[in-house]
Image (cartoon, rainbow, N blue to C red):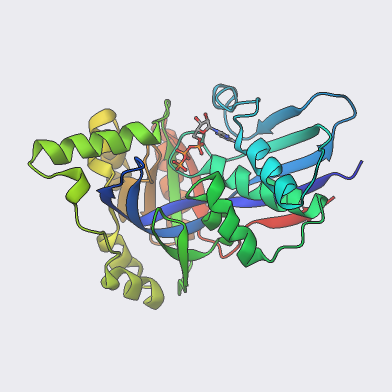
Length: 311
Ligand code: ATP
């Protein structure tokens, strides 16, 4: 049976603005997404038995692998079912998925979304779905707000719930060290804490202004000015993530101490992203963090989105 494999990138948000809480429970956001060269792979083949199955391997720890669901709540299953529906399949034989994970689970780097994007691309190919990449990105939002970007890759401005994308041109490569935490943070609880914090200081979370990515940051990215990018990075979710996991303050302080230009919470956390001046400094920073017992992974920016890897 034909096995199709695809890969998709992790992301970091260089700006994340959280706007009003909407009636459906989501928030409108303004996101500056950046793809990283840390990639997930998803293989799909038709099962030889009557069972659906999901195998998970990869460079993350066994404890992290155990957090990945192996039932139909896994986003790879939802992605394959979406592709089958779009291909107008009346009947679908059980599928076998193998996921190679390198992105920390529940780490704020959209690992699940990367798996969904890779699975959607692989399934679209396996089922001979005739859809352009743009069309696929449009339907991918059904799987989650970050999935269109995981297909898209590169640098992009995301509005709406994050899924309305405008491509930007990053003029230089950026080098990060991503520092994992022992435990995960559930994205809805981080948003919930931010709403509570806003209420505490007298703001109505439903009446917050629509957020915008500052034009200064976009200009710094398009000019490749790393120092300026470092000063302009911003994440509205950071205070909420830090309140839920105060030990992250220590991680941020350690990254600064060891030479990071800027350390910040990635997405909803708890992964901390530390921006370095260049590849060599990122290498040194990662080493110093590991010597201090942090789990640190180097990651550089990439233009690559989801890609078919063959059969
Ligand atoms: P985001 O940054 O998009 O909010 P995240 O990086 O914090 O997400 P993920 O690793 O994407 O977190 O996963 C969050 C939850 O989604 C997991 O705890 C898990 O229950 C569920 N999940 C569903 N499918 C997957 C998958 N393929 N890989 C990992 N988690 C998955």
